[in-house]
Length: 324
Image (cartoon, rainbow, N blue to C red):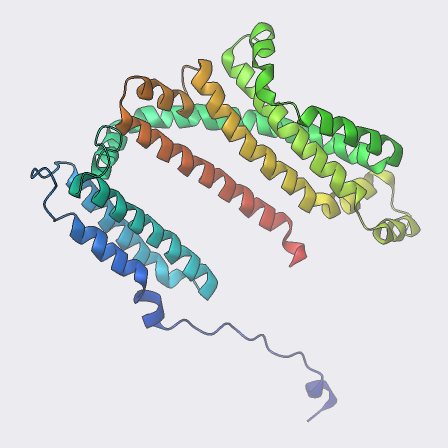
């Protein structure tokens, strides 16, 4: 064996393949069979709900997608998480069906059969898409405006120890004021309710992002800064190439907090005076006692929030890939 061969780098060991039995023989698929089978039981009232076919179709589609996507996962942890989520969905649908159509333990007016909710969702899809576009558009405008202002200001003030300490206390004071209390002032000063909503989302996102940026800058390892100074790094380069990357974990922490609060405030604001948006959709139909559409709206809000936070998590993982 030569010296070169003796010091050669070891080959990367790939993760062991997951056996097919452990991929497809799971409790999730048993829950699918139970959810599907319970749909064929007689209803408590003796009359088969005409919307049952919608639920059967949805359950079958979800199982087909699950079987198709299962081979894609290479890591056991990712596969377990995916199947656990699908299993919870099947379990939720099974429990909902038993408590409503089959046993009538919940009032039908407030908790309609889930097949009826799916049918209503399909019927109102164009209207729901318009409301989703309105809500997400407001979130993006206010959130992005907060990011492009809070991060540069936080970087500048955080790097100055004296200004940073004072600014941190000011941010704690202003962030403790609920942004929704500014709605009356926004209505009086701004031209439309949409601009008021963007303003509220801006306030809800600005202070957590600003505080996260400040915290990240103030906690950058001093040895990193000293090394950069020894290398003669300029001030702009120090901020953009050294301090900003080191502060990203805390910045994302503030951004995620602001994003979560923004969805809550937007839904509340839309329920107060908007003429579109998912909060308005839910409030409008709940006032008329149409709880089928109300539940459909609540589910859509949850899906949208999960989708946006998922994309945010992917962006965070990409920008912080160096931490791995």
